[in-house]
Amino acid sequence: MERITKEQVKYVADLARLEFKEEEIGKFGEQLDKIIMAVEQLNEVSTENVEPTSHVIDVRNVLREDEVKPSLTNEEVLKNAPDDQDGQIKVPSVLE
Image (cartoon, rainbow, N blue to C red; front, side, top):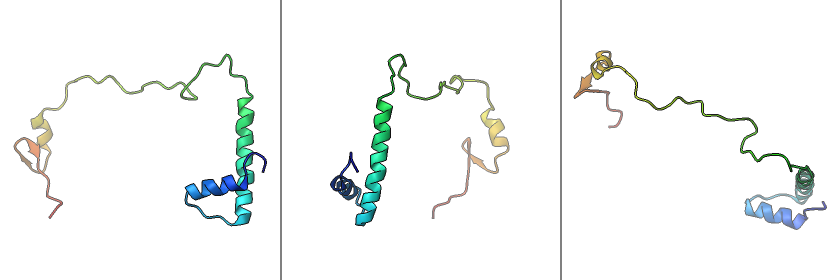
């Protein structure tokens, strides 16, 4: 471990309420060190002419406009309902 100490691993584990054996702390420390090294390598990449994005792919709204369109009338909807009352579908109670 070069970039992260065993004490730092223990501290993070304590914050996460995790308990590790001494050999596990060394193993996780090495893994965290590799992750930090990978992130440091990413920092070396030149992004000077790259526009910032929030998504990797171009995301567009695929939903249609929220417009009122002709639909079934209330009478047509209630025609197939097993029971109705006051213009609404009546269903059996599920609570006692």
